[in-house]
Image 1: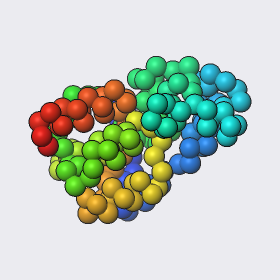
Image 2: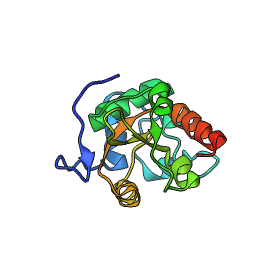
Image 3: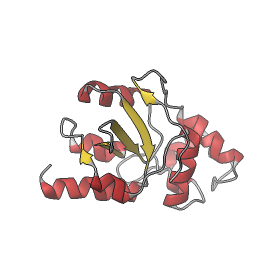
Image 4: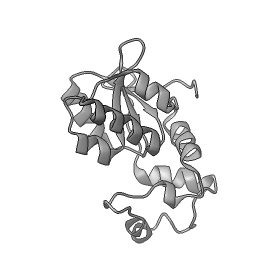
Length: 161
């Protein structure tokens, strides 16, 4: 897990999410893209999964864990594992399961009681604001893999939470 400092949404650090194209540029500089022309909007539009979401990992040569590491480095935030998501208190009861699943989001309270939002793909400012408003608390961002967030959400669904 990375221990780099991280900002929060709605706190004094004023963390702002980066544009998707900034992250694609970051990946291009690292040589992680499958196609050097991935910055082309038309190519990005074709790299969608079955639900219409951009297939971020498929856009790259990276595995899910390495992709998550790169996203955490880009956001300069912590990278968390599945155990951290499932062992902490779920904080997303006021958000729809669909919103969380499609956004690849998992809100939880960290060990100190702070609101933390795990993300698996680049997230836009509107989504961060929506979560902050709905949960009425400032939050900090951490990164997990898509599989880890899906598993944590699935566990919460099975538990009826």
